[in-house]
Image 1 (cartoon, rainbow, N blue to C red):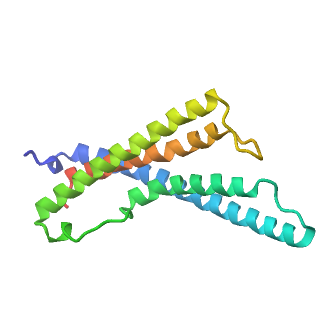
Image 2: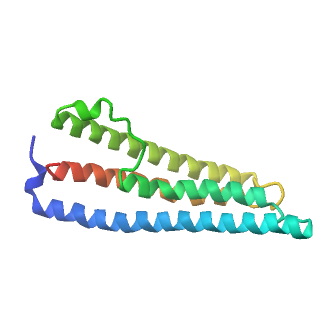
Length: 173
């Protein structure tokens, strides 16, 4: 096997791409946090409105559903970048270093495929939702746009998985 770590230009390219992906993952996490803060504020206003004036924010549950789903998707890139996904290390940590690295690389390949597949299906689902004008019941929010908004973080997570895989290939860790 050729040691890719002996190619400094390749290592530098991977580091540069990784730096840009880190910025994108951080921005994605900030968007997720902002969405959750907005949801909390809207729910607070709705509860106080119901308590004080006898009326809530119209369609508040639709906004919560869409906002939480979107926030979850926008959290994925930061989790993928920081290796913060749930992991079961009962077996992996007991393997020799080479096998542990290989198992981690296989996991990165699997995560890349899974995130790319989910992103692709979200885009496909959005096309279908647009074709028959799927909307929420009360606020009539077009759900195709919601699905399209959830696709970019999936593709970003797939790119981060590729970057993580390349990091493992070009470093001796």
